[in-house]
Length: 282
Image (tube, rainbow, N blue to C red; front, side, top):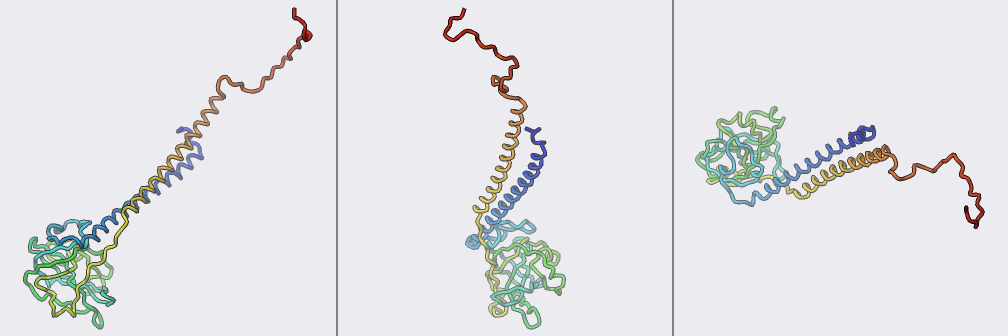
C-alpha cells in the first residue's frame, strides 16, 4: 500500500489531504475557542445576579484576572486616594460625550490599590470638564462591579497629564504607588457616599457594560463537525489508495489457478472417426 502511495497522483492527493486536515483541525479549534469564550460570557451574564462577595475572596493584587470574575459584584473597605485621580476622555453616557472619572481606592485588607470608575462627567465647552474629587477622605465601604483592564490606547500619548486614553492598568501601575489589582471596578454604591449627593448633577454613575450571551453547545457541535469532516477525508484517501493497491496486486498475480488463460489453439487437426454411424466398432 505504501508503494502505491508513491504514485504521482496519490502524492498530489496527499498534499491536498494534508491541507484539508490542517484547515479542518484549525477550524475545529477555532470553534472550540468560541465555545469556551461563550461559556465565559454566559458566566459573566449570570455574575450580576450572584450575591455580593468580598473583593479579597475573588481577586488578589498582581494575580491573573479570573475568567469568571467579569461583572461580579464585590464589596471592600478602604479609602480613595484623590492625588492619583485621572480621567478617561471620549466616553459617552446616554448619548452625551464626556469622560470617566477613575480614582485609586486603597483596600484596607491588603494596602493595595484598585482603579474605580467613580462616575461620568459631561464635556464642558472646549474640552473635558474638571472631575470632582471624593467628598470624604475617611474609610468607605464600596460595592462595585468587576471588569478587566482595557487595552492600551494610542490616544494616551497625546493627552495631557491626568488623562488616559483607556483604563490601561499597565500605565496606572507605573503612576500609582504600591501594588495594583489586575482589574477595575464600576462603582455601584458607597457608604458614606464619597461622590456626594451635592455633585450628582455633575458626576453620574456609570453602569457596567452589558455582557453578551453565547451558544456554547452550538459552537461545540461546529467544532466536532469540522473534525468529523477531517476524519472522513482521511478515511476516503486511505480507502482509495488501498483499493488501488489491491488492484495492482491482483494484476501482478495473474488469473486464479484452474481457469483457462484463453481459447485453445492446437495446431494439429483432429482426425475424423471412419466408422459409419450405427455400425459396431471392431
